[in-house]
Length: 241
Image (cartoon, rainbow, N blue to C red; front, side):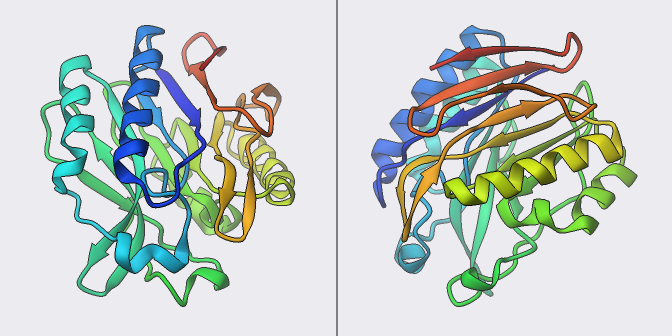
């Protein structure tokens, strides 16, 4: 299976522009064989906790219909981030667009202390079942919680894919943790981060892929948009953007 992690520069609060960017990257990735494309945390609005309440949307928001149409037409699974409106409040979620299927969401279950004033814990699931292998999904702070990776491993995850929004300093800590997860559980790990201004920090980029031994296979820079596709069978990477 070819999994793509995308590094974007989100436009603050502009869903339409961010959707257009997502569609462009998905098309480029699929042309290179990607079967799944994952974007950074809150990628469709930008990581803006103070704006979460006004930007919150439902999974069936019509502004997302173009992404679903692309999934249907190209046969690709797409994971994109939104502030999800729920009965309990606003959750940080990844919307999963799967070909000819109802949209579903993976909610961030473990929140950083800074997020608690703006978000509520979401509802997640241990792994995402695919035609090839179960995949673990993680949203940012979750990758630092040992129980998260352990649960994914117990449910047979074949790869660990983290959607994050981290500063340069946060990326350094995330890199160390991703290597630990790969080495402890013997599975490849992938991280999609953003660049550009986010909330009160600047996205540190460095989107990357490590193999099941924790060896870094490829990493993007700290300022540019782009993507990495990882072939889980051949254990090879392709860079684009």
